[in-house]
Image 1 (cartoon, rainbow, N blue to C red):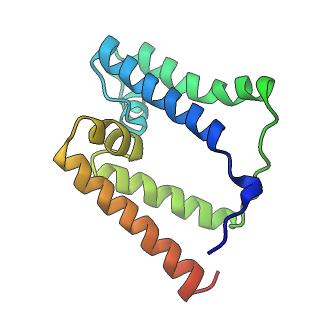
Image 2: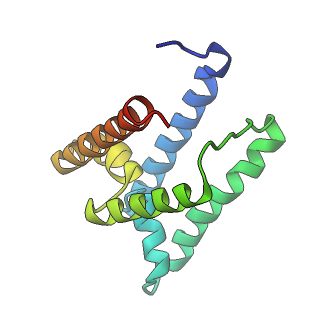
Length: 144
């Protein structure tokens, strides 16, 4: 295994992690809610009274943040090495997994683990293990 040192960016990664953590804490303190993106977005798709504004603001902040970042630093180049159909199937599979797992990486991995949730620990181990296995099969066995 080799490390691409030109792509090694510990300071932006640290800053991003701190912002995610601070946002999760702030949402829990101010709204009593878990910052799970799939649950927040799902709540917008089936809105209930009094929940729309904060959910829309949270999702809007996710969308606007990349434009704000572009004012401070150059955007990284993105190279997608997959077909449109592969991306669509992958997105639907992840969406299905978040529904079956009752949450996503942000809900279980960030917020659940920080609350010492056993359920989140099991979910995180399962989706991380599944991700590792998928990459191994695709990159080393199938050789795509």
